Image 1 (cartoon, chains in turn purple, brown):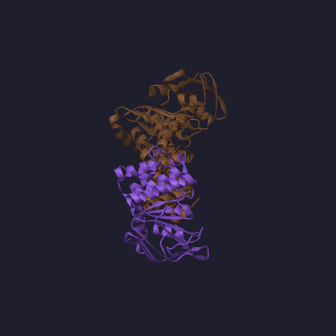
Image 2 (cartoon, rainbow over the protein chains, first blue to last red; image 1 turned 45 degrees about the vertical axis):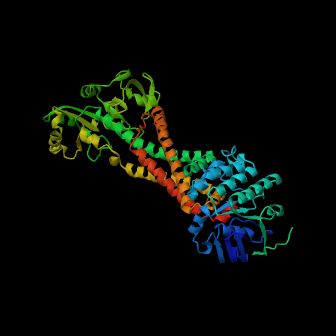
Image 3 (cartoon, each protein chain N blue to C red; image 1 turned 90 degrees about the horizontal axis):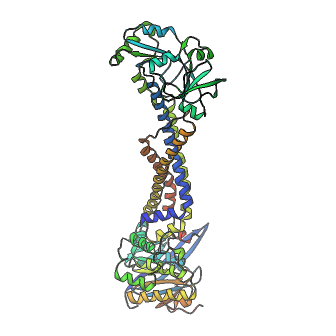
Length: 232
Length: 367
């Protein structure tokens, strides 16, 4: 890692209850992610990668351990603190795009900006991002009028408009065909290189993981060695 | 952007939005119609009472302004009252209650009535020629589709319409006082006596003078001004509680409609709520969205309700103008709107709470 870590996770545990059964989703995960790094986390279903994604995004609290994100201690945060963190520190790209169906692409982005209290939509750098995402002619369409690839590009724009320290992507190509998958991954890599955007991508697709600078594997709630053996 | 999201959410389910707006409109219309009818009918009664042209009215003992009793004042009372100082004219009438609130048939001596009140303004036909003739006002004729010379059945008897008059004098149906008295078993008895005084400025003093007469001690005696001012919702037995019950029912209806609609909407929008939370929306932001939606629905519904009240007024005036009178009561617009907004916000409370408490991870996984 060439830059100081922006994410530091030590002995992170997460236990939740399903019915009457305790599920140990994370069993002492450790991970460091450098500022400006593009990291892929791979693993089978149930390995704990989605739980890690949710904790990093402040969507759910960890049970124990240490987790620092951009210098902030997530474990010490209240619900409201995590809500505030989601407005600007992290940006999400989900497998199912998760755009608000009633708003246009433009308004989906504008709403994220409004919630974060930023004013970046008309900044030259963001216009450049929009141009690189190829959304200029589709920005006034509602999600139902956009293809999967277009929706995912809108989701990327929405995540970036608040200039988050970390872009969290959960299976961003999971619902896309090969052509659109490559396009989205190239966009993410380009954003990482051009703007130094830290990206943490969760995927079970080895080809998608290849777009990252570094890959780690999760298994049974732990992050395995960076030295990462092929598992596919 | 928040308002746009509210608007787009409402547009996204147009049928549901329209149904909620319509239900709130019905709720508001219900309030405005009942209040409008209460005011309309009382004002109409007031107008018709004033239309007689009397200065003083005397009613039988144990009656109030809006309640009637059987005719019990002997005809001789009219002569007795005419002998009193400052009384320039007197008219006794017999009233028989008919269908509908404040509707009645009135028995009059047509010559004395004309002399006292200035007479009817006939729209068609004229005064009665036989004891089987009746005069009706224009509203009663319109409601029962009556024509001059045509038959009308009232009080289990067939009558002939001899004339149709402008509304505004005392009653809607008029017949010979002797006929009505005989028919109702009140021969020689009046329900009301109207008096005119020589100087209207002294009317209150003359009322006191009549009240002081030993023979008149038990009779309610009012100046016409006092009498008509007492014709109000608060003096109509049970009317105020009735209106309060209707407003209460309107609150319950508004609450239920909005509760059901928003409860469904929150379930349906579970994923959207998760998305908003992932973007950093606080619980108060989510509740705020639902409250704005509720306020928008109730304001539009209230406006539609006001519009519907005009349609209801037109329907009443067209179909049953004699039985019911509805007035547009502007002061009740903000009241009914406030009731609708209040009831709707109460209805939005639980769905809003449920939405705000939604777990973001579970909401995002909702299919």
